Length: 72
Length: 265
Image (cartoon, rainbow over all chains, first blue to last red; front, top):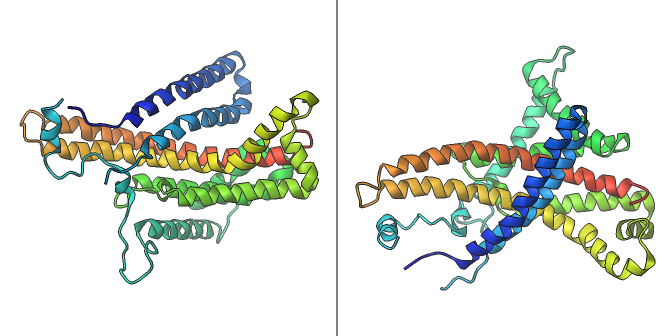
């Protein structure tokens, strides 16, 4: 017998896309910084904005995983 | 699995932390429900600490700053130069005090999540991030309407320049929804969900450690050390997340204000 919630599996699925997205964003920032170190300060805020926007999707999944009908 | 789980859970039933772990009892019975709890106390305490800190730091400013003055000035300078000036440009410097207040308030609220004796962030209740999100929404809409006028602002934010007319039926609803409706929602939910998840992770490892320590099987008890060690590691990770979320909230508000001020969107 196993305990748990199916919605957590849904959260796991919804975390795949943002994980890839955030990885790509940081990879791109490291790439551009390696090519042109003086541009690091210009691109850093953009990296955080992009990472925050991508990460939000995974967090929506997390919230939806907690919304459930309580079997009272 | 089936043998181990009930053996761990046999003790108190605290262990799988849920949304109930975020409810705090009222301090005084007579007042309306939820008026003074640990959460609201933390908000007042945090605001008081911020006001006190900045007033004390700038009470007697010196040319060669003392330690407190240096911290206050570098905090303000970070927001003013690193966020507002870089994103909005010199036009946005009049908003720098608001952004500095926003940043220090969110940071203070977030850091409460790892301060001993409190260990929960008020931002892990949706009410506080929601108010902050609505404030940001009011700010960037007000700024845009004041600069461009109502209809021009709506047009600027709904129609990206250079869109072919045939695409309007698709683009306009999407842009309207994402720029004018959903922005405060995503701002609030991002901050809330990060704090919520952080508190939940810490609860899982700490309460899991307690549950393992009280396990019936002797062999399971030493495993609690691993759980407590993970709780400590996660606390440091949480501190990083809290800094990052305060930064991201301020940064995104600045990006939205910049979008409202820009002539062509």
